[in-house]
Each structure stands twice: as C-alpha cells, then as structure tokens.
Image 1 (tube, rainbow, N blue to C red):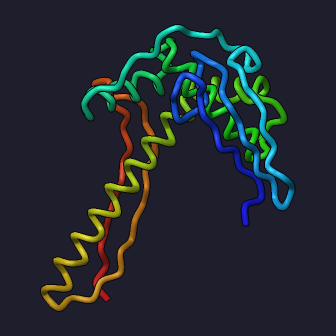
Image 2 (cartoon, one colour):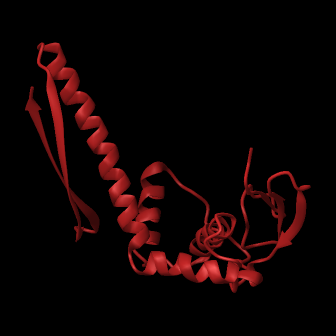
Length: 173
C-alpha cells in the first residue's frame, strides 16, 4: 500500500501543480480517507504567473534543463519546477510546508546540488551502457571478467556542460 501520496491537478489543465492557477491535491495517507484540498503558488511564497514557456524538441528541453539547474534561468518554468519539487519534499516528510520546502528546493538549484545529481545520473547511465557493451564484447570472445569502476566526481563545467569523470577497468578472472 501507499504510505503517503499526492495526486495533483492544476486547474489550468496541467497534470502537475501549477503556478498559473490553483491546484487540486488529493492526499492519500495509508488507510485514511482521501483528503481533497487546494494549493496555491502564494502558499509556497511564489508569484502567480500568467504564462508558462512551452516545451520544445529534446535538444531545446535539454538546454532548458541545464540552464535551470545551473541557476541561470529565473522564470515561470523555474517556479513550476521549484513548486513541484517542494510538494515532493512535503509528501516525503522532509518538510512540513510547501513554503519551507520551496526554500530547500531553491537552495538545491542555487547551490548546484540538483545539477550535480543530474550529472551523476547521466554518468551512471553512461557507465551502465559502457559496462554492458564491454561485457558483451568480452563474453563473445569467451572471457570471464570482473568490472571495476571508479567514479571521479563532478569537477565543474566545461564549455557550459557539467563534467563527470568515470574510470572503468575490466579485470580478467
């Protein structure tokens, strides 16, 4: 069963908590009856926006995400991400209110923590593909190997892109 969850709907038609309208929140908490409430951007200390930038193609969306997580984007889309992250922190029991959680979500972006996590996740996905490919190649040649991985860490930005250094060594058994 579910310990605690929110099912949300922006009254502007979005399938997430909105910064352009009130949002309906249906809280599921264990065996308790589902509780319905409304949530406003103002409750989180955020302004109510009139327009949201629309998404683009995958390359544009990737640039947008890097701009947002690097702290250089401060618009309605950032407020939307912060508001939804704040809600997740409340549902997860990390914060008791969306206003308190909003500050934590903003600090995560502004301090580079959210970007560092994205870089780490991208590196782990790359590592998974590298390991799979290397192991398949070695298995084709009848080799038994033990993968050894050392993650170097996030070293900053290079050409506007985050760096993650991964070192991979395959040891023959």
